[in-house]
Length: 298
Image (cartoon, rainbow, N blue to C red; front, side):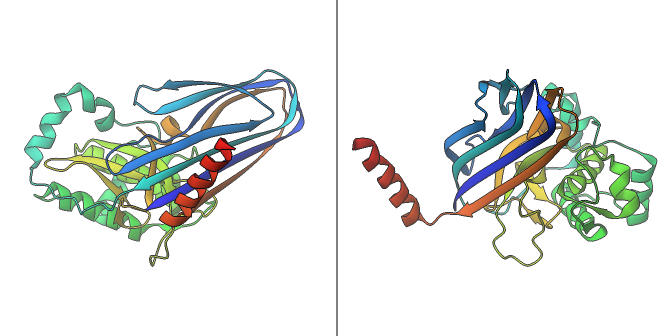
């Protein structure tokens, strides 16, 4: 599948901002099953952008605006091609998973983090739902994803970006990042290296698909013996597949929020986020590329 993605964020301030410094986590990377092309970021007013990588390997941009402005618009655009993904197979055991705790490369994926951590509410939820692993790690994690999907009601606006894990556990309502945080916290308590993945979901009409049409999406990757990193989407009770466009991964949402930073002297601000994920037919993509090349020659 080929997609065109546009992620547009607009800040409107009650009074002029004197400047801002923001960290953008919007650029995806090519990897197994995913090939990215033509990424760019446009801003209004114009801003300086410097590119870097964080300690998880994600691509980031530091944005600076050094003059007064009443509004700021940040738009990222890219094209991506995703290959069909076969269902993962694993053949290891819990003993192998327990041995990974001693490896430095999995340290951050097995330790609690700010938004995916143990709590009395989580312990009560695990006991009430009888969420215990069996002899098969892959089957255990898959059942965990399915159970979280059934236990919570998807309700946009019921939590915020920095809501603690207790909110969704006590209310039973949340969005994709809450589902992911609960799954990560439980899987890590079993010793399974787990990470939070941010990206986009192309809604293709599959029954039960849940995501905010104008927003990004989140799911979980777990390291399993014999299979490597496997993507689980507890919001939709599915493995990650050719609908899931991966941007970044970290311990939880706080590591990979699309935009974070500070504004100087703005007072109250309004934020509007719009995301468009468009499937592109091969012929349509070829015509666009051909037209662009023709204009360049002219």
